[in-house]
Image 1: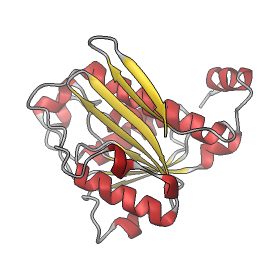
Image 2: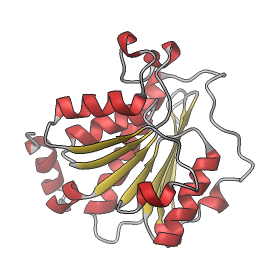
Image 3: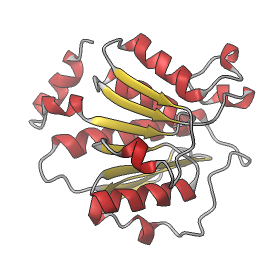
Image 4: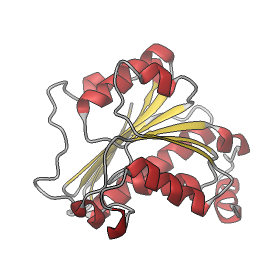
Length: 222
């Protein structure tokens, strides 16, 4: 994998650290935001990646996920792994066809350096947050619905996810519609947050909100 263009940009910014490539990243969710995020990780040179998703590819997924019509009925985690290995065969990529739950979270997340949320399920997100706090592991929350993206780094024990998001929050279903550009931009914002967190010394985690339809944007330090 030729990373010269990415490395040149980061070196100009004076915060590139080559050791970030070996970080063990767990990506929870391989659908609308997860599939483009997984591809960004593969193209970005990250080599230790675990994918977790129990869902199968449906016809309506093709509009905004990196799958093809011939993949309908197959598992998202397995197809995303295959795509990522096609891009970069040197990746160590593990696909887990399962739903993240309290009973298996220690087994699946035990050795990770960061957790990337690409789910649409707040029960799972609060489970991730609790585990991340108890084990002081950073995680990146990513929500994408309709034309709006919300993305932020939750810094282990310092996470204040439960003050930002209500435990009564409704899951991000697609019944009201979602643009492919929303999920792809959400994946890009999450990827950039990942790079900054591991590359900039004393980086201040931020919460970003971007409405791609009306162009509104704001960010706040966490």
